[in-house]
Length: 591
Image 1 (cartoon, rainbow, N blue to C red):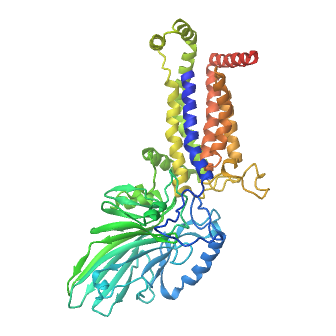
Image 2 (cartoon, rainbow, N blue to C red; image 1 turned 30 degrees about the horizontal axis):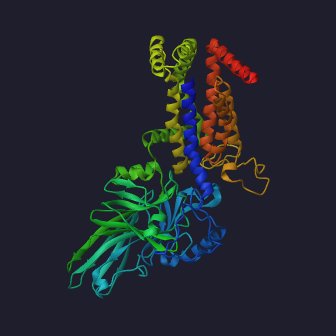
Image 3 (cartoon, rainbow, N blue to C red; image 1 turned 30 degrees about the vertical axis):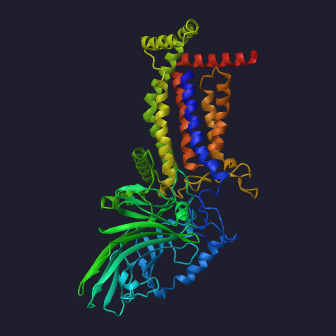
């Protein structure tokens, strides 16, 4: 039992360390994940009125920036110079100036938990506070040497009259430089989040034209989500088939440019729930990430230079993903040939277990229509599967108690000979058919489930803004009701580690009840540790997603019910536990 208690304590302390460290660092150093200007890459001085800490989800967090974005969008989204985009997954427009994809909102996700808040914005035009756009074009030595002109970000392209980009109607933008070359970009869109850009250069001049097609994504870090060691926010991509969650914005800012080794399969920027990435066809030569100053960054994709002979044309196709990181959608694109696109969601070490958990959660949600109820049902299923193991654990505990007198006799006999004591103890275990570690198996099996659910609740956009009941309107966010501000009646928000809500209080209370049913530890130090552990976990877990706390509370309640049931089946075990607790209490009084 002492070994088992030590193991339980080690597991709990590990959980505290893993999650408490992140919460503590985020509180003590809230700006640690934000890029800092360095001498080699000076950035404009920040306006104190417009600076704001990044949020967990990302997006503009400063009211002044939000107001400015609304005003700028009204001016920038002039229908006269744009081609509407109307698709099931995305809506917005193409900018004829520069042939930019700079206006996109996702139709499946709202900006906030309020259903009336409108769609979540993915792309915004250059110059707006939430700047984020994609561009497709060409560079070449001819233009640099004063030869054939190439289109730029200021070039005004021509679209067919009444053009609308829909899944059934591609749109071709054209521009002629007056020197014999004609440039065209044909945009098409699917029902989800993929836009395809087919770039064509036709050379009718008498001399060859040398060009390099490119694609880029440009964005500000003002809308970036918080970058932590468990949740990456910033540049990322797949190179030679290996997905890389890095570098972060600070790395790019420090050097000004970060080149990517290996063939680019796709690259771009990610937040927790959203991503933008360019996906090249064959012939992509290199890619890199750049800091442009003022908190603006760019992901560049460059194809190999090609010579277009007179009367010939050059075609390249690049795809653009801009939208929500929906697991099923990303997996479909991967099945269609986009290398490791499903791994754009950073599931982590337990991805092999997290995806089945996620699949089961979604299946339960489809059945009951409430993700909170689905989490409770998932907990019931997990505990049900583990119940036979729990019974064996209980039997192991009973066996260990039955041989306690023999163990004490061995400890007295060989108290000065530790190797001999260990040898005789193992022989006793073998003769009695007792496995001292059998009771630890349920704990080890719970760890992957816990981490899997933690990742699902923090990463899966499908969980975003999912309500449960009463005051829980977003299972992916912390409990909004805090005890210290009287559930919102007092006009202040407690720090994260003091934001104790009702769910955190229930977690501490149910864990305390669970520990009360366990035998009392004979060691006074262990008694003190187990006495404060429920309340320590209450503080550690308070800032985490409400769905995770609901899972743990439900698990605690089921564990208590399971212990009560097993004690009723084994009254002699209950009597032994009560006697041990009474003996420990009496010993404490005597001291």
